[in-house]
Image (cartoon, rainbow, N blue to C red; front, side, top):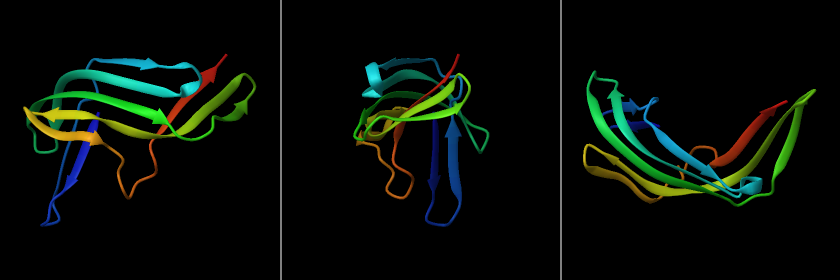
Length: 113
C-alpha cells in the first residue's frame, strides 16, 4: 500500500506499508479482487503510522489475454476501485478510490508455467 499527497505549497508527503499483512481474495476470471489488512507505514519524513485498508476492485472491461512467451501470459481487466483506508485513525478514503488523472485501476495476473 502506498500513498502520495502534493501539498498546496508544492511539497509532498508520502508513505508506504510494503510489508503490511493483507488478505487478498479474487473471483474467477478476474471479475473482482479484495484486499484487506493493516500494519505500520513509514513516511518520507522518517515517521511511522498505523494504517488499515479494505479495498475492492471490480471489473468493468473485458478480460484481455497477452501471451508473453512460451508458457507465460498476462490476463487483465479494467476496473473501478472502492474502499476505505485509515491512517493514524483518520479516514483518508471512504468510497470510490479512482484517481482522476492516473491510468484507470485494473485487475491483473501474470502466469508462468
